[in-house]
Length: 508
Ligand SMILES: Cc1ncc(COP(=O)(O)O)c(C=O)c1O
Image 1: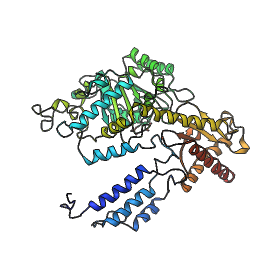
Image 2 (image 1 turned 45 degrees about the vertical axis):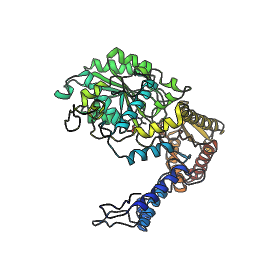
Image 3 (image 1 turned 120 degrees about the horizontal axis):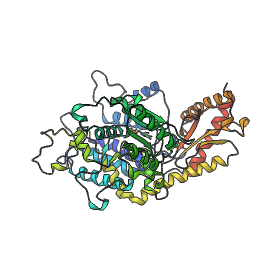
Image 4 (image 1 turned 90 degrees about the vertical axis):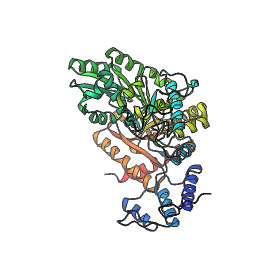
């Protein structure tokens, strides 16, 4: 075996093995049941927690520490981190990382390369191509077919997150409108982007960064549960045209962040076709419904999009991040992002036509494909479908518990998928009709949710997010972790009810 004593003078083999063992134990035997979801601590308490090992700050002349101290520090990291694999972590639209994905990520990290040229990442180029072809096929985009093997120009790109992928998509949309965009810069004609009121805030940020301005973003009305109203979209597009603005893109959301509503893609595609507008789907959260034969109908019409973003690190349990941007016209990437840098993309080298780096904005790209590819090979299409079906089954179970709660819980919206949005109702307010609340009661209920949340954090029993829905702070259970069982749902709802009862009496 090679020694790991290197030019830095610090032998780290023992340290590496011990920290790797800690991480591996965490992956194969994650916390569950009554184990804490979080040991919530203030910043001062966290600084104090590291004081007994290596200290948190890196001083002006940071000394090397021995393996025991660094391993102790790694334990502190684990101890105080939020346990997002815990089945009672229902707080975020990522949860329950797949252990195969974690070790896949380690494999990619161990081989530490950039997915820019075939020369330094030959296997990763092929894996990425195979994955993009499969994902595009699942979404109904034109492909050579998943059985054809990897292609030099796959139908998309892996990106560092959904927000960056949206930037790519909007730049490609602008390029279709204005073919000299790259050399001449953006023309003076004002453009508009349409997204629903429940769409992700990334649209405004992307518009600002691309120089379109947030005023270019038109927020389209939704129905009660958060799906875009297609008639409101048509009116908004007509209004933009009447005001001499060009509709650049419509961002349809397949799985909104708060309620997991699915915009009507086919009707939105029709509106886009009438105006010649780029049709983009933000499937960051909900595109994974496509894996389930029982739920893929929620994305009917996805095959008509020009682009779609899909975060596999959300419902599918990939490590952060794993984002696929799927494209109808992938050749547009090179038209927008090629540099032709001759130190990297030499035209006289072997297999240079595979280089992905000359059609991306980034120079080096993290390898996010290995973990997804390994997991897909281990689980198969059926395993991916089962993950989605289980998530919906647990959401259905919680909907059933809520509806059988004699008014202790009240749903605020119901999209029938993986998000369950509800209020806990104090006994003196039952039966509660959300639409009939007086301002005073509404205000008190609004202030109750943060107090319930603080109790969860203090006791570490669960983590559930809250946010205003129809003007009142409501809890939101997000299901995707395959480890969630009915007893976890019961326990989480019981905790919310207990904290709610205790906090309500002391709320002024
Ligand atoms: C619907 C939706 N779109 C976009 C995003 C942004 O994705 P990312 O965090 O990968 O930038 C999110 C993140 O939660 C989301 O829920």
